[in-house]
Length: 420
Image 1: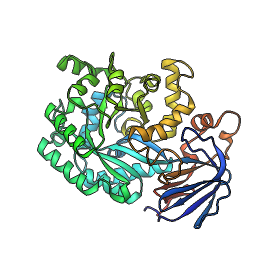
Image 2: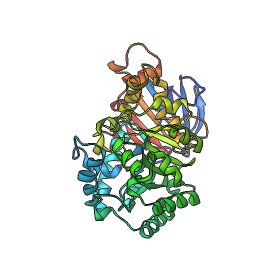
Image 3: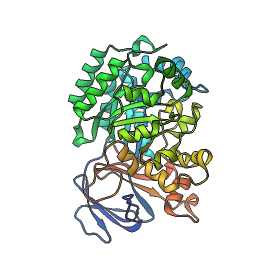
Image 4: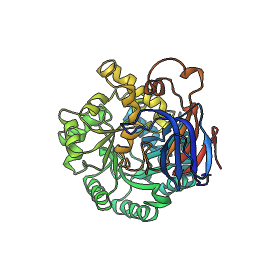
């Protein structure tokens, strides 16, 4: 399904590098062997030329928290808050998955993501059949950090999702040896204890040890819902973030999804430990969890990415929707303009790359970085009018405006169609 790698010069685009220094300019970007080799005007580089006149060139967008295995559950778990949503719908559905249904669910999700210009995902899968997701990501060409969910504990968890620790760690070891760094380091492995209520202390300890030994992301959910926090306070007398910290789970390689309800001092604790947060505004609203304090994340200097979460609690994997809603919901929580359009765009580009520890290679258009690039058609009525470029992207842009997608130097979407 993934296109062939070749050498390209993308000509006459409106290039928006997102490197923090370079403003947008009309020019060219040259790609060779999967990397950006030159940026400028009127470049003359061997290889094919792609005319991008009237198009905006952006770094590929980054979804820092998603569940590909849940794409098949779209519309199957409506009008529920987090814990009933998990217990009555999502966990039974995940327990019923087979290798083939996980693979098809992942393929469907990846196609949706590519159509919206997402080139990198950090995905947490279910307990079993994770290899089906790795294979789907290999086949389609998307860049991915993939974690199999770790669960050995919890009320109302189906037997099919409770896995003995030794078996879980053995499977994780196999996935790591088989997939981590494969496809020119396009595929990486994460360690993914699902959330505090589904993991024993011993499972968390071994998960942390495995992640540290192999220098992998530790990807988990945290402080998403008030009912979840109330249970933890009853069990341990502290909030969710503090609970994870006491078990050694917070560190520079930790990625915390949601963090809607941090308790006093917990954001400072995240900053102190160097952990990152993924903001999931639509999912937080769909499940009635609340509006996360995004402005506080940014002001504290915490690394923050952006995610749609799964289609089962969002119904869409549209990162453009998440950028817009991230800024709009901050207007309600912390005041109009408290999170700018430029900051919202960064969540899906360079800030998102920093959150998943891949900013040395992706997240901006710079010489030496991976050729993960997208072209966006701005020659449509809804793009016309005033405003700076980040404002137009975040508030006017749509997933349907993405026409061309390249990952690792391979064209995966051309003229709005998947390249076979």
